[in-house]
Length: 165
Image (cartoon, rainbow, N blue to C red; front, side, top):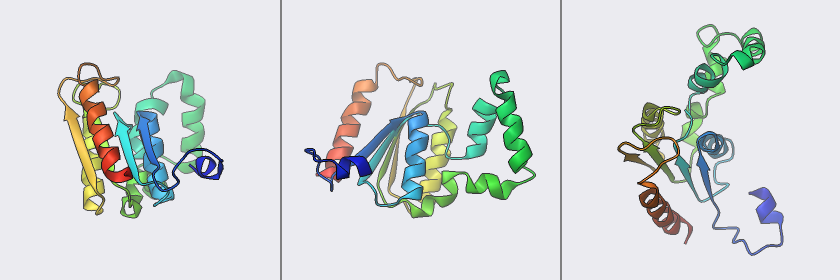
């Protein structure tokens, strides 16, 4: 975003939104909490969890190829139960009270990579923190979306027009 704003390009500095899918959705949660007000709106599709423990337990710890990484993280920061403060502070959800942009979340009920419960918890936490959040649930859709992709894109376009125009 900073590069776009500093670049001599046909970009309206006051109308920038973020769109991310899966891990990109997690990046967006981090951006919204670390630099509130950087953009005007955000859309995430089938995002990872806003709780770092969920992501660690889903992709790092169980992956045999990441044993060294998991062990290094645990040695340095401790297990989530042993050092909950570290894990809480590593999670964007902890800082949702900073989010100032409207957020649209799209998630399918059959996503076996990033479970729908993660987006439901995220939406509830954003709402509890006072953020403007909309969760759109797509019955039967998986991580990559399929038949309802056009509907999700129509909703995304409508959402971005509302907040960027």
